[in-house]
Image (cartoon, rainbow, N blue to C red; front, side, top):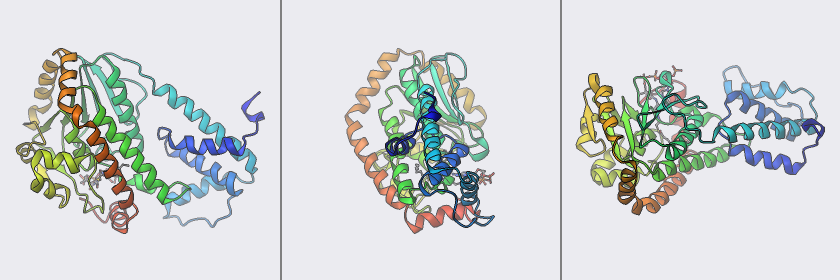
Length: 363
Ligand SMILES: CCCCC/C=C/C(=O)SCCNC(=O)CCNC(=O)[C@H](O)C(C)(C)COP(=O)(O)OP(=O)(O)OC[C@H]1O[C@@H](n2cnc3c(N)ncnc32)[C@H](O)[C@@H]1OP(=O)(O)O
């Protein structure tokens, strides 16, 4: 029987609604389609006033819903279920591990992932946006780490393309509010954050950050979960959580005081003090700083030598060093994510994000 000949039951629809939350970010166009079909299936034809031209996001949503005209509720429900089922099967097949030696691995839109000389390199690749981390990029980094944990490389590297390592969370992640509302958005973001950070806590091989330029927010906090951090002399390390009405994540509330002592950690995590590469190295967050002019050459020569060491010995050494803290780190991650879920609903956070998005503020 063809899909369209079948009728989606209310149960199918509800299961598609929960399935959609677990999918890899399908991109804005598909999200608009999902939104429109959801509204049509639950409320019928578009019946709200058209938002103003400057209300870009709500106008795009309204346009998508309005374009469905008088499509019957049942057909919209069926189309929603079919769309989610198509997205689920393509995301299942893209999450399978396909070892691709010596060349760029397919299936990533926000990253360039390569495996060469026993090194898997995961490069954040939104240079025009300073490698700000979108929902799609969080999901792709998790996929790439899971694949790297199973491939035959000895070590794994995270780095950035362009002049920034990463400017942290993409602040426009906060503008994409689902039909279920802002609380649901905060909840799903906290789950995403917890899952993302857990991937770093659990990563079984030596994990190296090659910090090619300035790093902000979550791209800094997770450095405490890496085994080695190499920085260009141009890199800076900035965690402006209070400025953004937010609180620390990435287990930094535990790793930073442990690495640099509580007083220095407080200056970074509470007061948002930005560190130079030399300062971050003196405080133990960075392993070594290289002059920017020779950074790539020196770092990759070093890493190629390390990648020839016996891989099993390196894995076991990492396990011995890290394993006894894993449970604790997972609990801290869960607690930090819960605190942020509340912060994201606060006026302090909403105002800070709006000020950035309306170009009134930068760090
Ligand atoms: C769901 C899990 C959440 C986990 C919680 C994570 C928290 C964090 O990571 S908090 C940190 C968030 N990051 C920021 O607040 C940084 C915001 N960005 C800036 O302040 C500045 O862009 C800059 C200082 C990083 C760079 O300034 P500048 O050199 O002047 O470059 P532009 O501002 O012109 O940036 C170019 C282009 O990129 C866009 N962009 C940069 N960073 C972000 C970002 N974090 N989110 C969204 N967009 C970003 C910027 O808007 C420009 O875009 P266009 O104007 O379209 O060219």
